[in-house]
Length: 393
Ligand SMILES: [Mg+2]
Picture (cartoon, rainbow, N blue to C red):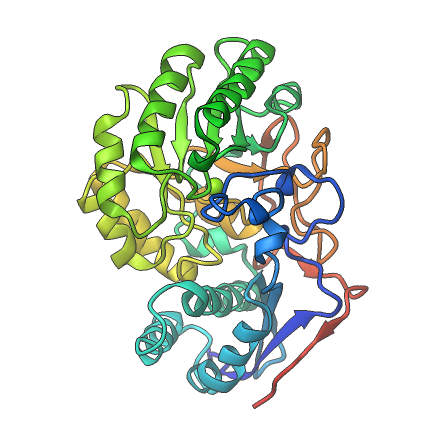
């Protein structure tokens, strides 16, 4: 069988914004006084948009093969990511065989080492990588999960991230994770408020439902140690997520030692590549790693990250990212459940994560989801969304 080559790679942004889940307007739980690394500055405390969480916007990468098959993927990165794709990465993609994803990944990563390694550059490489998997699977007329070794379970099981774990419980999710509202700069009063919110929620959901707390890099070791001990002992908090800035591996190692037995320390949402995760694993920083497949290097890299975690006895529960993580999670023994990010503003109903940009995006029913066998990641770009291509090559 002759394998097509890649004719063109194209990078788009969504005109007029949109597509980025952080880009919510009005009162939305996702931007309601959530603790962040910027919370020490009172001017940037109320809303994450004030410090620019939404400045990048969305990146859409399309790859078109010589036989006309088109693969695509959506992640963050916006215009600067589009520039990197068009002006730098395109040379490693165009003309390559669509089966040669490892080769393309290695060339993208090595050629950007002098300004990349993590952050926006690996986020951009991830977008290209996901588009390449979509293309290969569409050409083979198979779902991506078949290319990753096949499903190891019949369906995905989800916990919900949002402000209302009590409603998530009614909707059939196995747990609920809330954002933390007050950082260390808000002192004892802030800590009390954080614990009160958790306590109220524990009373609403009953004693056995999983409750988790996402701290979005906002804490320090001392605060996170106090918080996790009280929250575990008094409210049965299952895990404390991303308590510290991602570069503080030493802090995470200390926090994991300080955390009460049975309580889990999780992190990795803003970590990238096998080497970043090797640091977390070797230094025994956490019990669960949470790579975002659209940021950590794509599926090609997540395969390697997950193998390292498996050997270390650490679970991999990827951050959000919808179909891009679902197709992966269903194929891995050490990813027993998945995250569903509640995009409804309250949130009192389940809505697709990438609306309006994606069509056919599956959502959990009763906290569970069977993946269908549509080719690729099984989603389409919504033609109503206006894409613009800011750079060409
Ligand atoms: Mg998180």
